[in-house]
Length: 287
Length: 287
Image (cartoon, rainbow over all chains, first blue to last red; front, side):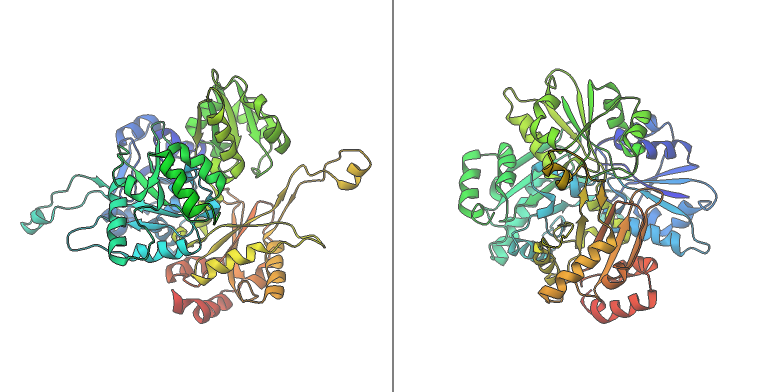
């Protein structure tokens, strides 16, 4: 049996009791380590689980999946995924490969916490979220702005938008690659401030008042861990906020933001007075 | 410290390793038991956790919260919640009460799996969901249809809608109440079939082709457990489907349903041929 096991968000103790049992008895244990990361390293997981772990990078999952699935019809193989198994399409693809194998390989997924729901810690109601979008690192020549259309759709309905921030893990250095060498760049994680800045930059260009300077938003960092941090404010304020270590995410508030959501969130505001004034002016009437 | 601990979806082993540590050492352990239920009873939780558990019903949480919070400033109190702590507004309210207490009571939430993300097991991409709606049991005289407007908003954008189904736990029998006695009705859990039927009934009345007979949908039951069941088909087919024991949920597919989502989901179809034909006719062009 292939077990695709969600690890939750923070550290080695966020795995479920059932997941831990499986990890401890499985033939092999893989850790998917390119769509998200925990706040602890592999060694800490290994020490707590009492097992050695094979790190599966993108290349391994996408082109050597047979090696991962080898023997899974008879023995238990654990494939660990940060967050929830279905938070990334890669894992759906993996499950599909099991089903379409001849004969099919039995698999089971163990759900766990995901940023998609942990973001409820902001006080924003999970019922009032529209579609989720991703934000990639802009470069001088590449500034994809399709997120803007999705956010605009949510905003038109008064819904919140969760923005998931780019992660670059094990990216080859292009200059080295051109010289025939594979050297990996240090990992990069987008911050709330970078995301807010990119949103303001695109707003400048598209100009439909979807993510302008005075839109209310909330940045979150290391949700689910003891050091979790939540900062609310305007996008302009968040572009200056420092939420410390990764991982970060951002939520742009929709105009249907209810009074109870406001009451909960204002405690996290950079500037409470400003936060209240903007909420009253632009949000309260729609709530 | 008050710990609001998500239990996940299926049974006693879905609690996180960290959550289990806290439960085992906490001064008191409460179980919230009216917005959702696990697939196992309290006794099974108590046996596995090695602790006795106080069941907190709606009345207790809403009017005796002081008793729950008593001493939480100095000692650890665990408040267990099925699914994720922020999946229900009651728990946000509870955290707010801690913060607004004088002096504030320290609290921490431990996220866990939620139906909002576990529904990814259907193969539908979590990025393509719009706002979540709830469906209550209709009576002869009370058939609230505000869900229809929300679903219509999602549909107009081509987004999927997760429909959470009504649960009636510890509801007083009204006839007995009129005679001055408090007798509780047996618990009731809405099925996928009942939900599909109610959606068809409202479509009949509202007639905007939002949730008609040939709309594709997927029903899920007991997600995250070994006995999880997923059935895909038209709403008309789902109105006849029997997914067995609770809890059930339903997702109405949006027209942006991508080919990869279709490929994954069709394995669950009641009638694959019909499923494919409708997908090709009404969905594929928008994907």
